[in-house]
Each structure stands twice: as structure tokens, then as C-alpha cells.
Amino acid sequence: MKTSLIIPAYNEEKGLPLVIEDYLDKVDEIIVVDDGSTDRTLEVAKKYDVKIYKHETNKGKVAALRTGVEHATGEIIIFTDADYTYPAKYVPDFVKEIKEGADLVLGSRLENIKNMPFLNRIGNRIFSLLATYIGCINITDSQTGYRAFKRDMFDKLNVNAKGLEFETKMTVRAAKHGYKIVEIPIEYRGRVGKSKLRPIRDGIKMFFALCSVAYSETSLLAKMIMIPSLFFILIGLITGSISIYEKIMFGVLSHAYYPILTTFLILIAVQLISVGLIIDYLTKKLDRIEEKLSK
Ligand SMILES: Nc1nc2c(ncn2[C@@H]2O[C@H](COP(=O)(O)OP(=O)(O)OP(=O)(O)O)[C@@H](O)[C@H]2O)c(=O)[nH]1
Ligand SMILES: [Mg+2]
Image (cartoon, rainbow, N blue to C red; front, side, top):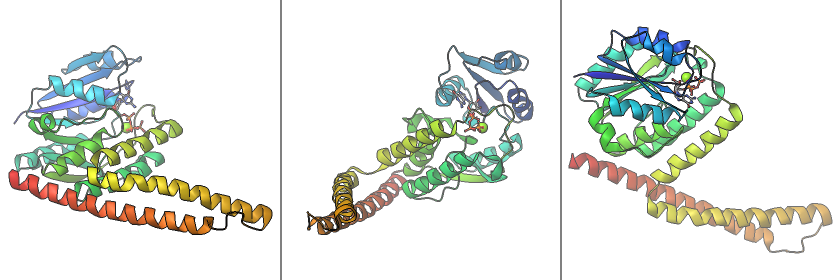
């Protein structure tokens, strides 16, 4: 089975040559996608026997990965980063797993996790818990950028995501569609070259990416039950705050029934969320069993 390695690169003139040299003898084809870099990334890539594609402007990592997949000719596709964080020595293990029947192999960053920026580490934990819940299988690193899969699966999954949520969505969709996922523990090296992480901007992006995964993967019935509960919580918070404000400022409550109303609204909301979560979990389990049976 032919292997194609895809390296998305945005201003990685330092890391890219190290990455290419690391992987050259491990795969059949290397595709570098220069994502509108303004440094010498393109010139550096041209020194090697690799296929190069260039975005005229910076379109983001996911767009770069898609360009790579479009031009890949292998049946097995491997993603890695251009910052020298993912060691090439695991490629034979990835390929072996695929040949033995895995559809998606994830390089799970369990060793030297301290090399990952703090914010990324927290986000990654939350994303992995969410993926474990949604996919109904244990996932330790849903966001890893080091992964191998069958091209056929990628085309069928048709992952609809552009940002940080891409890797997690791909992982949970594969799990939900009954594809076999295998995790291989890998060592994570410290990055070469400048990090592009900006804590506040990326923290906000991560929050929305999490909401996007949670929302798109929750069953419709569960959504219909849980969404009204957000409304109840909001009203409950308002009546509760008014009660506390009146008690502190005036010592008496002019709306004496507000505390009871608050308790009532919050209790209903908690009940609705619990029922929604149970329905969602059962739906996911049933969907997964159905997908497995239909394969
Ligand atoms: N951040 C970023 N990376 C891109 C983009 N386009 C391609 N990439 C590549 O995608 C890969 C992952 O990006 P990284 O900047 O390493 O992101 P990260 O691993 O989450 O964070 P740091 O390594 O701490 O910077 C690298 O190989 C980048 O060169 C882009 O628009 N933004
Ligand atoms: Mg990185």
C-alpha cells in the first residue's frame, strides 16, 4: 500500500527541513503545502525531492491539509506538522496497524506532554473527553495532528470543519461511523521555530470549536430537550440575582416568590439536561451499533 505524507507549512523555514529529512525514507511520497508563508519555507522545501503546492495567501492549516489530500496518490495518508514535534519513527507502526485492519491511527501525545503549550494541553483534555463521550470509545488525544488513515475513509467521512475542531470532528465522525480507530502512544518534541499560538485569541477559538463539535454531534431530540433548559437557567439567574441584590441592599425582598421561582427553574433545567444527556448517549450507542451491523 502506497503512503503519502502531508505536511502543512506556514512560516516553518526552520522546522520543515528537519521534518522532511526525518520522514524521507519512511514514506513513498511527501507533499508539502506552503500555506502562504512569508519566510523561506518554499525555498527550503524545493531543495528536496518532494511535491510542493502553494497557497497564494494564508488559508489555515485545514485548507492546507485538504490541498494535500487532493493531490495525494497513496492509499494510506499520513498527516504531520512542519514544526518537528512529531517524530517519524512511528510511521512503520502506523502503517502496520492500517495493514492489520485499522482505518484511523492516532499518534497520542502521552510522552513529554509538557512540551505542549499549557492552553493547548487544557483544550486537548476537554476535546478528548468530549470525543470519548460522543464517539463512545476511549480517546486520549482527539486533536493530534499526527495521524494515518485510509484515503477512502477520509473521502467518505467528508468532515465539515475549517478550524481547530477539524481533528476532533474527524476522530468522532470516524468513531460514530464504526471505523476502527487505534491509538499509538508517541513522544511529543518541543517545537522548532516560533509558535503561532496566541492565548486569548486561541482560547476563544477553542471555546467556539468545542461548542461546534458538541452542537453538531448532539442528536436532534436531545437538542430539543436541552436548549429550553438554557432559557430556564438564564431566567433563574436573573430572578436569583435580583433576590440577592434586594436582600443585600434593602434587607427585605420586594419579590418574595423569586427565590422559590429561581430554585424551581434551575431544578427543571438540571432535569432537562440530565434527560437530554441520557437520550443523547443512548442514541449514540444505538447509532454506533447500527453502523457496525451494516458494515
Ligand atoms: N498556526 C497555523 N499553522 C498552520 C497554518 N497553515 C498551515 N499551518 C501548519 O499547521 C501545523 C500546525 O500548526 P502549529 O503552529 O504547529 O500549531 P500548534 O501545534 O497547535 O501550536 P504551536 O506548535 O505551539 O505553535 C504546522 O505545521 C503549521 O506550519 C496557519 O494558517 N496557521
Ligand atoms: Mg505545533
